[in-house]
Image: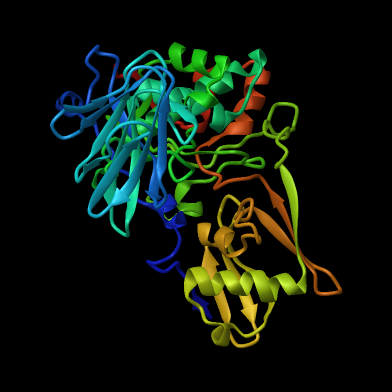
Length: 419
């Protein structure tokens, strides 16, 4: 039996289980952080186009200012509608206005609105400024720098979805969780030129186009409030649907345990689960024989480096170990030549479908039909640790306050106003 782990050259999914940089443990650390000029809290840098190889379009209907980000020297300013194309050139980037000279810079280009309308990057409006700089492999990173509170306006509505007034407590809980996550990650990816990815590798972020009234209200009403444990911002993990019970983080991801990320029941007093309204509360994934020999074997070779010769034909799946909370900790993939074992998040990655969607969760049973078809009968969606978003929605519908929801899913934490 061979245990598989993802190779160092695997996809960026490996970043999902990277270490956290917990910062702002003291007032001194807070003072050293990037803060806004008007005292509205810290700034955050979001990687909104990471590793871009094609030209980027930046525009505004009321004008743009182009600066050398390292010296703040103004290089170009347009009044009225403006469109710029930023492309990689040599060791730097090239800025080409629709009218006027081409400007080339080897350092960081900062593009700000010169009027009232925001900067648009490839058609998406963003608050704050956009910086573009060259990275290796002839690529560029585009970073949105803005107030952390403004960043949350484009995160919360995507993460929790559009919600009604009776579900507002869930939106507010999501705002605090997302803010806590962001605060804990300030400077966490500094070597890449930003703090967080603007995607599910950290938190999904849609800029101004994603903003909604109820989530904006939730962000404003909880402004500056985060969850802390033992003087530090917590690892505010959350997921779509727990399926009935959350799990300790060390059971589902290759991360250290945390006293506030433990198993929590999602059972309501009437015997139903608070997250039962989720469209992913229960699911069935059917794997035909061709899927096992195609999809599963391909992913094992691509992600884990297991050769087809090592595997042979994939003939079945077997649950090798379950966690105390009931999820599959280790899955044995049986081939004609060898049996391979994958664990935790790697189980979901190994069984991703042809469109790259990973398995719903690791909380499932295996049913093998007479014709060899394998059915995975699953519960919930996501890693299963921390706040269950659909559970929070169910609790809000039941009348629970957002403070109660957070205290339930992150037991032992303290709600603190940090700015």
